[in-house]
Amino acid sequence: MGEPSKASGLPQGAWPLFHDACRRLGSAVVHVPFRLRVHRRELIPRTGPLVLVSNHTAFLDGPVLFCVVGRRSVFLVKHENYRGLLGRFLRRLGQLPVRRGTPDRTPLLTAVRLLRSGGVVAVFPEGTRGTGEVAQAQHGAAWLARSGEALVLPVACRGIRRPPGSRRRFRPRVDVLVGEPFAVPMGKGRVVLAAATERVRSELSELVTELDRLRAGGLGAPKKAKGERA
Image (cartoon, rainbow, N blue to C red; front, side):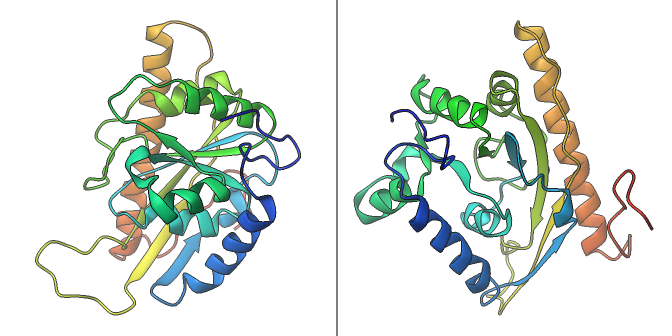
């Protein structure tokens, strides 16, 4: 996959201007199919290495987050999507293919190099789509944050997945809630990695719970970030 460009923050083979154009166009177009609300967007660091982690319930979670992050971001995408025109599009966009269930360190090492050059790498810690409560998490996100010396940014997303048994919806409400960036425990060994993974899982799970309460009308407004003026 080659060395990433420090100037672009994207893997070799990506087209930076194409990436930027797609992100800007997407940030406008995404409001057509969805009534999108992004809460606490100001918590997204504008610079520096960042591992974005989010719950995963629908195929379009990734594209929606790609459009709202506001920075060049590289998502780890399952290898099965890299076929034909879609595969070419994803590579030019700068996304990384990963094989689930198969040891393949190449995309992970590329992601680490991107982080060390100040880039953003996005991961769904659950590993696959589900209900999105983040009851469990894989080690990848925590390992990337440790290896790339990056902060972790939890982001919760709800509303894209249609509830089972419900009718087709017209412009459903989609909410994205940004949490506070945090650093995972550093150090080597499985025990430290397990602790880092649990920190990622618990922070993201709590954020999803907060968003569910917000959507249900139980909070009225998202909690203020630490240090934020009322």
